[in-house]
Every structure is written in structure tokens, then in C-alpha cells.
Length: 455
Image (cartoon, rainbow, N blue to C red; front, side):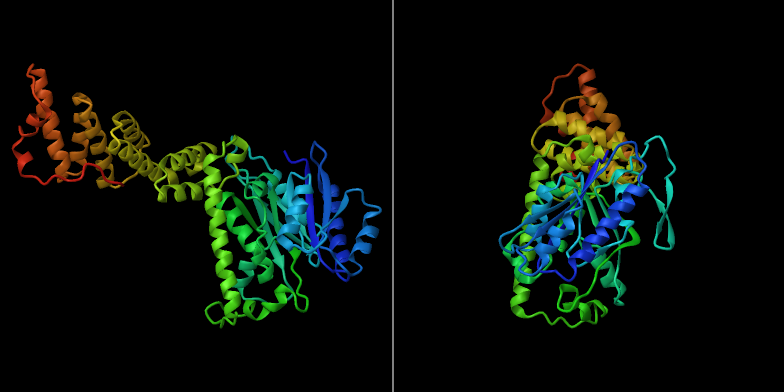
């Protein structure tokens, strides 16, 4: 349940624009109070972080805040950049969810209410039908389906007065902080916006890095409804890139100076370093049910699986399938592969008990695998049971492997060994394992394959 929200506005020498921006946020707060009909009160907060402005901005901020008890101003003694300014605001803020708006952009009155509605929605797991609502923005009404599961981040559409190529408009909407609303837990996990000096040297891209990290770890809901306006002013970041934004990406001639390209290379290196750090942090973070529900768990699990981090991948797949039962059919095959590969790792380490557990888990999941892959899982389980001298349990697994894949040489040889050993045991003979191998005439002639393979 969300009981508060904070809007964070960094500003530096925006005397001509800041009041218009703050009034748009103020109107959105008022609209929220008009429309909100929940059973618990919700406290708004508007925080401006003044980056050591030297124009009339500080005086305007003081005047604006005189009649607004939810308004706060935090001052930096020197300009640190927009990333540090946003992080300062977030640390001071008390809101359960965070909004960001630069000191020269606008939010529409519906923005705060719409994002709050989506983030605060608690789906009923017993209801299979999605809940539909009507949202009016300006004179236009939009049908909107509420999310079927909790989400960590909302992104809305962005109005821009200049005509832009669709590719770049989508790219802007997917990376701006202006149209983003995020739960505090998510913001704090990724540790906020980047603060490295290279971002200030570039003159932007904090939003790009922030989006990379949030989208990797948390569910993001994109709503196409335009609820904010990104304004181009002479010389601002939008203005400097207008030519690029109006050109098809395959036709644009990159005119970035070599020294700036070097800064972007450094920026991307820092992005990847932070991502690696966050993956390790996530590995060590105990997951509460509420936090786990917000995770982009399929993406995270796939990443762990590609790194052979089977335990982490399996935990996320299992968690996600319980939280979102509708994903079971799309996930169970890859989970079966993870079980099989984890079992193979245990087998190679000599832990037959755990190997058998995970091979059996792969089979019990009833995956829709190819006959070759499913035969391999049954063969792997049969081999482990054989090594444990559980012959009666091993035989049906190996028989199933051969039925699924009649030319499966390894399974044929292994089944012959188990059958002969079980026969000798029931006759009361004693024998060594190596002697039993030679009892089947094919054993000397068929090629010895690797015992275990990944799916």
C-alpha cells in the first residue's frame, strides 16, 4: 500500500522556467487529491534541489514555498550535476514512490494520479480477468488495463512539440526520468542515478544508465498515454540533438567529436561495472515476498543461467512461477534445462544424491522438450541411480531414454550394465562393477560418450 509520493526537481539557473514547471506539478498534486478515493490518506511532497543557482531562482523558490507546506528546497553549495541532485532529493524525500522532473519541463495534471493508480494497484490472484479503467487526459479518454501483477516502475508517453522520427521518440520515452515513476525500494536497490564526473562532462546520459539498471532488475510498465512534456529550449540537451532525433537512425551521420566518444566509452564501462556490482549485490540480498514480486525475474534468471549460476536461476524461476502462475507454460522448459544442468554439476562433483534430486525435478516438471533432450534427462537420472546401486529405479529411467531415442548409444550400454548387474544380484552373485561392464557384448564396441550433457 502506497501512502506517500515525492516529486524531485533539480534546478540550476532556471528563473524563466522554474515557476511554470512547479505550477504544473502543483496542479497535478491538486488533481490527485480530487480524484483519489482510497481508504487511506496519501501525503504528497515536492522537493527542489537547487544546484547553486546564481540568478533569481532561489528567490522564486522561496516565494513559491510560502503557501505550500509540502514544498521543500535543498541547496547544493556548488553544481554537482543532475544525477547527484536527484539522489540528494531522493535521500531527503519521504515518499513511497518517486517522480522526477527537470526544472524546465512540464507534467500534465493527470500524471501523478495515473502513475500512482498503476503502482498502487494490488491484483487479486483469484481474478483471471484483467481490470479495465478509463483515463482522461485533457480532452481525450483512454482505455487502460491495470497490471496483472505488481510492478516497480511506470513509464508514460512524452509530448514533444517538434516532429521526431518514431525510433528516437520511443528511445527518448524509454530513457527520460521525466516520464518515470519508481518505487523507492527499486530506486534504493540500484543506488540511484550515476554520479561519476564523466556524466557532467558529457552533459547528460544519467537517465540512460538509470534506465538500463532499473529495467534489468524490475518490471517496467509502459503506458503510451502522454502525461508529461519534454520542452526544447535553445542550447539545452534536447536542442543540441534535434537533428539526430529527426533523422532515421540508419541515415544519421554521427558528428560526435573523438574526445566526446571517448567519454561515452568510459560511461558505458561504468554502466557495466555498476551492473556487475548490482548482480553480485542481488545474489546476496534476502528476498522478501513484496520485493520479489517487483522483480524482472525472467530476465534476471536468464542472465544467471547464461553464467551457469544455476541455484540463483532456479530460485528465481521457481519464485516467479508461484507469483505469476500464467508464466508456467513459457518457463517450465527452461527451468527443466536449469534443473538438468544443475544436476549435471552435482554429478560431476560426485554428489549423487543432489544430482538425482535435480534430474527428478526436471522430469516432474513435465516439460515439453524434444525427445532427444527428454531422453538425456532420463538417461542422466538413470546413470546416477545406477551409481547408487539402485538398479530397480535406474532401469525404468534408462528404458524410457531408449524408448524416446532408440539410437541413444550411451543409454543402450548403460541399460545393459544395469540389467546384467540387477540380474546377477537377484541370482545372489557377487561381482565388481568393472567386471559387470563387460557382460554385455556391445560394451566393448560402442563408443564411450560423455556421461552428461547440457540440454
